[in-house]
Amino acid sequence: MNIRLLQLPERTAKPRQYGLTMVMDKGLSIREAEDMLSASADYIDVVKLGWATSYFFPRLREKLAVYKEAGIPTYFGGTFFEAFIVRGQFDDYMRLLEEYDMEYVEVSDGSIEIPHDEKCAYIQRLAQSYRVLSEVGSKDAEKILAPYQWIELMQAELGAGAWKVIGEARESGNVGLFRETGEVRQGLVKEIIHSIPAERIIWEAPQKSQQVWFIKQVGANVNLGNIAPNEVIPLETIRHGLRGDTFDWFLHKSK
Image 1 (cartoon, helix red, strand yellow):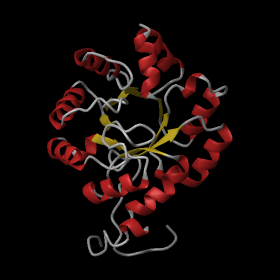
Image 2 (tube, rainbow, N blue to C red):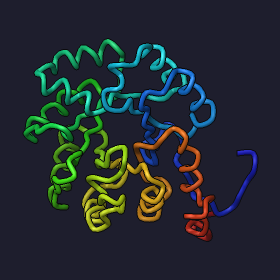
Image 3 (cartoon, rainbow, N blue to C red):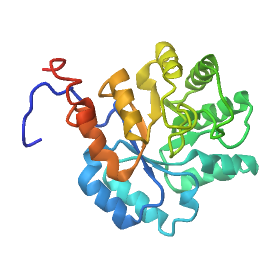
Image 4 (cartoon, rainbow, N blue to C red):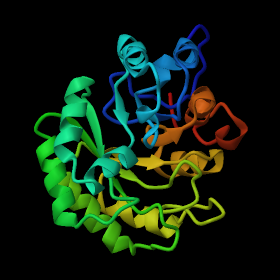
């Protein structure tokens, strides 16, 4: 920074193990990706190529090269993984990861039913070669998991070799961790945090109010995901207490 301010929270430095910002790329053009990185690369830790958008992107290798040159890892969205699994094409998915030289992979079951032992087996196998992010929670708003179920699933997936577990919220932020209105299921999240180290969880939190809640609950270095490209720097201001929502939150708490 060119200007020094006192009493700001200390942020972890890249390459971060926690305090992560995961950005959702829903089909950015190569130029759009370059523009995003020119402004925000210092604050982006990993990029998810949302859903199965990679299947349709015409110059995928070129865009992946742009992210790689910036030192930012990418991974295919969990829905893409599920699309291969439901068709019995796991070996094809493994070949895809190798073909595109991926280092990260997401394992999820938000759109299909996968027996949990089988899901953990996928995690265990993939973890031998890749950094695995496993997503817990359903995209179906009618499927409500009790807090103990979230905790048991997350613990099992971390035990199977997942690097981080992701709390499902969708791009809209109104399922899983959140009510239909976008309000955080506070009791659920607090129980999860009580049982699982916060640095092992990435919370999908696309809405500003959700980001504010997690930062106040966990701290400036909470892992947050599904962040829109144009919200990366605004999120960093919230993390530092330099936006009205958290303006006085870190005052007198940091040197």
